[in-house]
Image (cartoon, rainbow, N blue to C red):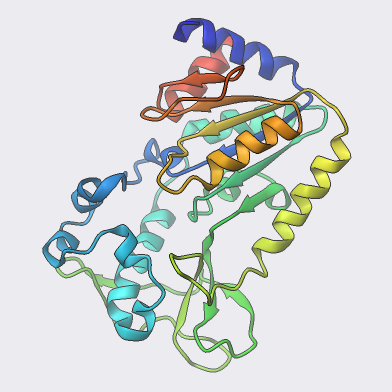
Length: 277
């Protein structure tokens, strides 16, 4: 099928579905104006100071920096936290929400994004899995027993020339130790999953209760570098006998019998939505 035929088929499937799973990766946020971290060059275009330091995304997304160099760690995560707060979710979030609201059995979001934008766009917080955690929440680096607490009261000042945080840094409101984001980083054995674990359980319960409805999985901007969302969406399509619609500008390939759209998230959602009227 050509792209127009795939869009027509995607619209038909969504219009007749009983339930919808939305899988979202970093590409979902690009249309909101968030930077594309694809590869070292994409990351360094967004954050030139890190190129001078020879540090890429994987290097910086390491919990050890909060021990070894807290100003560097909070420079990276504090800047992203501020950016996500200032950025408005794009129109495509509203399109997806309206689709979910029309579904007889509702829907669920499964995302690797840590920006909290699905909640801000009006999605039911009890129908979202943030598989890698979120910058909307923090945890104590010393694990003092406070659990997870909101990041909203905290703001981090950043030296834009060095991308280092300017003290005071976020501190645990219970014990005063350094706080860190409740985000799953690479090699992260200290991540507190007590917020995300119930999200998984709610999604599993919802899927079990569905029975055998017409399920559609719309996956947006989920790449192969960290393939959590792609793998989950493919597994759901297989296990629940649903149809996967993969929207991905660079890596749209899908298993046989599913739909691939080599488009950006917002462009594809607009195109499908116009056919669902």
